[in-house]
Length: 362
Image 1 (cartoon, rainbow, N blue to C red):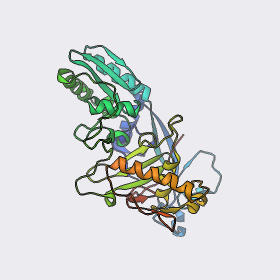
Image 2: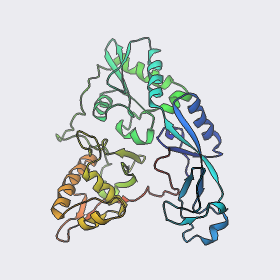
Image 3: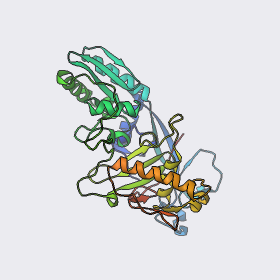
Image 4: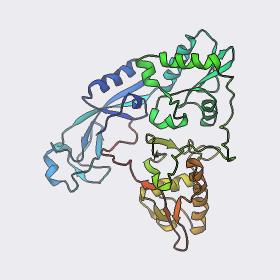
């Protein structure tokens, strides 16, 4: 399966297949530094060319994998194609599963900033304020800081740091990508110190405010598209029950939760029904109706009638326009047939994905 680079090792559930070479050594080094917990797990692949049962596989391109607990009884089933697997005939492989220790990452950032010789305080969580002659300068750990706070800070010059780099990189301007926490811990903190010194030397005080609206009076697009691009250039794909992946031209694919997309319930911060509808659309490649959504085996969304279905589809339309800065309708049909079809590319998995990645390991 594709291996994460160093910038992806502190993503929750990051997987490094063994032997892993240098990447496995880096993963173990992060564990020694206390910023990650590393667990070695055993798994079998659904369709491994070296297995005795490969001749009986219906879909030899299946990339599903099953992690074993040590007392597994035969048989088990592939989570992707539901094929029955005889463990006794499978080659057992090993991988490292990483879980970040964000509290340790916060401590490392604070100790590094104290090397500037200026007072440092963390307020709110994940936002480190460094007192300078021209005012306070913030360093923001995007994985911890409230997105409503971090977006305002970064827009006004704060230095961004991310542990899960692929998921949070979109919160920083393209010309100022976030520093990677893993590289900061293992390689050198000089990049963070240089960025903080530069900010202290000439940036006015950073104020905790939400993002400023753009020239049209609305909030700036979270995923801006290049000139001439439209919905056909946007890809949204299913990652897990709480996350989608987003790919637009000129940027790396990123993962985002309902909270980060502004599609969470205000009080509980759990995914809203319109976010559930977006997940459902991804699992069904961008086409559904209210009856199909209710009875689906994958990401079902319970709607009593078409009116209830429409009441969630309309706010989703507004959310998508806001996120991508497009005025055109993201839905190509939503009329008398009561079927909803999208104008963007909705996929049940990442484009070109070749291996099954377990959602959560633990």
